[in-house]
Amino acid sequence: MTDTIPQNSIPDGFAPHFRKSPLTEPWEPIYSKTTDTAVILGLRIAEAHTNSRGMAHGG
Image: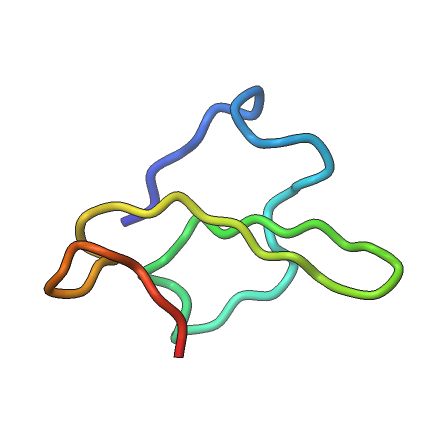
């Protein structure tokens, strides 16, 4: 899934993520924001990204 999100709906400071990977391809589009101490990732969660309880979680 590579739906396009209108640029005006992306929060300030975020841009398309600069690294691509076969692992993260199903989660695209991924956005990132770089600060002095971190790279913050953002993505829109759809039903296909959720577990059996309907929630997304990290590992």
